Image 1: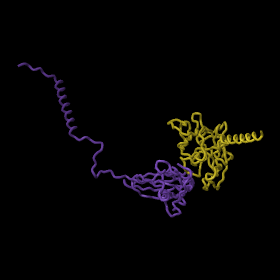
Image 2 (image 1 turned 120 degrees about the horizontal axis):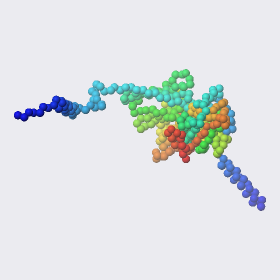
Image 3 (image 1 turned 135 degrees about the horizontal axis):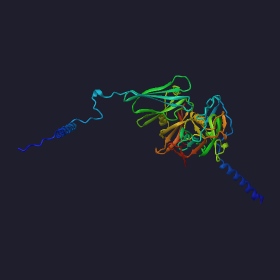
Image 4 (image 1 turned 90 degrees about the vertical axis):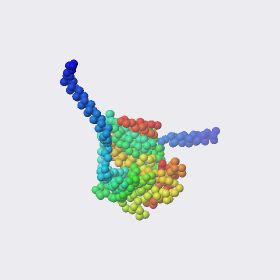
Length: 230
Length: 214
């Protein structure tokens, strides 16, 4: 009897383990996920991306972040939209467009569509992950805004952030995050909520994070906010 | 002899007025049909042909980190030629602009700046030279210095044709790293997407990629 039941139990255990592993959304940065929740500045450090060595940008932590346009109002809620098909980000104050720019979303890992909220803003962090030829390890990733939803928990580490290692915006280039040019990431970081109070700022009930909609496709509506399309 | 009824003076006046009005109308009609119509465009004599007025314009493309920008000044020298002056302008430092090149070309030639023109470290940029239906991808060093092979411009399109004659270049989209440009080829039927390559700027070599960057 044992000879029959034991293999069955072992097989069940293995299958159960495989099921839960496959159904779990991978981290955007498989090496770091959202491990580091404090701003980390590593000036003069070098990074690795696609087998190339990349110099990290110098970050002056003494330069304070200037919030743009203050806190949102009920009449003009802030909202960020990402069109995966067109690799374009739109940031709105109510119906007014604040920023439109090209981005790079997931190539080696899918950027999951959905509705999210920013839960933490970090001025500089290290991100690593991938494997083999697409291994990367990047210090001083600037203007990082991690987001989450009930389907994509915080520890998965999906974020909007500046990217200094490539310049191929308008095309997929990331492992799941939404990459922006540094000048665009800075503008978005200073505009988006929560209002930055330090180099690391958590969203709270009094200082909530801006909502983000990541859409497979989008319809732009003149004079009003875009519509997400499947 | 019967006595004629006297015509009242007011009637005489009215008759005279009618004659005058009728004559005037005929005169207007007559002159309208015989005089040439005024045209909105006057015929100019050869001495009055409008001379070409040179115009100029200036555009700039900022680097992704905002520290430098690519400036292109365009001056129309004549109807048939124009001069492009390309320089790099430091945004964050008090330094003079670095001249990259100045070239006079015929009217059909133009230089276009792709969105991802700047390398991530701002050391290189690439332009598209368009002449008729022909496009050439040109790579430059932002400091104006020549490349390792002594050339001041790398013509990626010519390198591609020379080193990968079995493919045709479809597009160059941007930089995968500070020295790698992403070049996508056409498929064999020119309709579908072909393989993707990295063009390594320092060695001018192409690296075929296992994945497609289209």
